[in-house]
Image 1: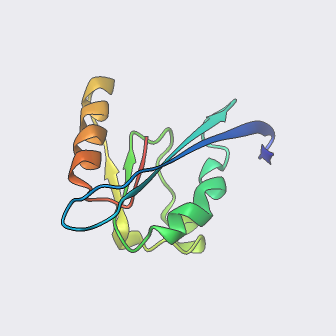
Image 2: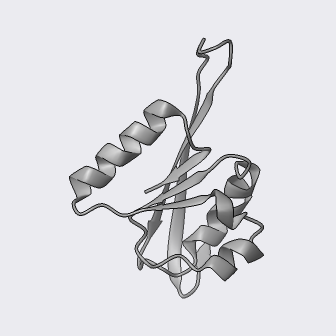
Length: 111
């Protein structure tokens, strides 16, 4: 699979688990996207998954480039559902991701 002029590999690990939180079942998915260079269109590879989850907020933590609102709108992702999180340190970004995941407040977290 290629994105731009760089080769990207998408590694996915799907882990289904049943949880009894307010009588709801949760489904978790972990996708690791490895690109030789950041900012070459990796978001396009995640577009189908993000579009499916866009009924809930999508957190973008420490993106390598400033997200392009027109590109996300073109991909069918509602801009009002995108949440950009900047942290001064990597540890703070990881803590933010952990808190978002614990709270189940977002449909997706991109870190």
